[in-house]
Image (cartoon, rainbow, N blue to C red; front, side, top):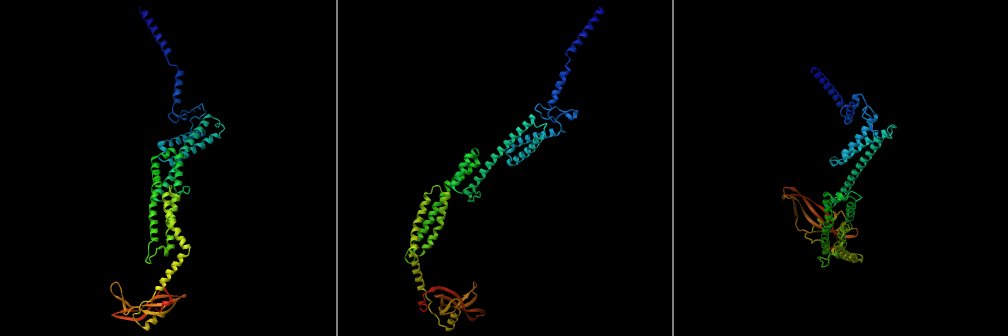
Length: 422
């Protein structure tokens, strides 16, 4: 019995050992799985090939394995990371914060990436590998995206800047500095149509629409408010033309040339508004018609010679009406002083027009001088003139005045020589 139990125990132990050997893991399988886990570690993380003393094997597309000491790997890594960085800055959340700055960043990243792609393309051992073709394709796609995004931004900016020039012109009266833009309703309408057609979505932007609305209002409403004001100015000139003067005749008979000049400014404003601001010219043409009617009358009157003759007659009437003042005092000495004191032309007669000395005082009532006013007839350049002067005595203080002297004030009015003795 004891022997039987020992035999059974040996059998059971042998069986257990055999079963254990059958269920042991396959060592080759374990090694392969471990290798797969290592391959799954991202580049640059975990144990590097340099740490282990072995090199990674290239990928199936020929992409170089991680090796910081390899110029080929470094060129690949720089190109790959440059493309990735460019793609990242072009994401909307980054791009829209500073488009011009992000574009510069992307250009820099892509430049560096392309430089390293060229290095690889010039390497005979790398030039035909698939990874390099894939790298160039990625670069082309990112560059195309950058160009498309920046071109869109640039075009939107260009249209926005031009729209702002029209907006400042319409709302603040600023000059349009962009010589490609015509400062007129036709120029604006053409620009507006082009903007809406070329930048369909951007044209719908609220900022753009607010400016478009303001400019539209200017060219459709505000510009026409000038017409009633021009009409008022024109009506005022016409009224003055036909006013009756002190001679009992219409004013234009003596001032036709001046009224022709008065119409020049409103005509310039009408021409500008018709050419640049007003699409509907009906109302402003009505104002111009009023001016044309008056100008036709004035120009005919001037060109016929009637205006010149009438003015000459009027001027002669004025000359004929000029007389020396009434004689109030006779003093040959003072009269001789006056005639001798004429410094323009030749004095022919002097008349003292006051019978007492007049006193000139300052603002505080202090005497400055006393004087006798004198009218003098003068011949100058074949014409006769009425001149004016004073016999003066300067105040010396203490109620005392100095000696007499003559102060000539110059020629005053032309007069008829036949009236110099009247």
